[in-house]
Amino acid sequence: MPTLYTVIRRPLITEKGMTVKETQNTLVFEVALKATKTEVKQAVETLFKVKVTGVRTATVEGKERRRGKFAGYRPDWKKAYVRLKEGEKMPEYLNSL
Image (tube, rainbow, N blue to C red; front, side, top):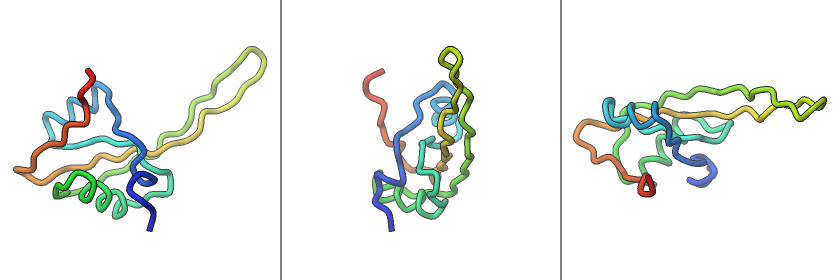
């Protein structure tokens, strides 16, 4: 089984992510490309000590990037929307903004 920090790469701190966090009791993370929903659920539960209701994942395809005449692609990545059970305290990983 992979370690917690290889499954969960980082929290996604975006406007949409903050809105979902406040309104739908859901956290958004960038996760490993090969991570399953079960692995993400177990990692969040052990890392933040909360109960998870469900996990939704989406694979984001990398965009094309150009440097003059040279073209390449950014790598594909995966994000996970982790919904917490009702009454669970939201973990605060956003302290610097």
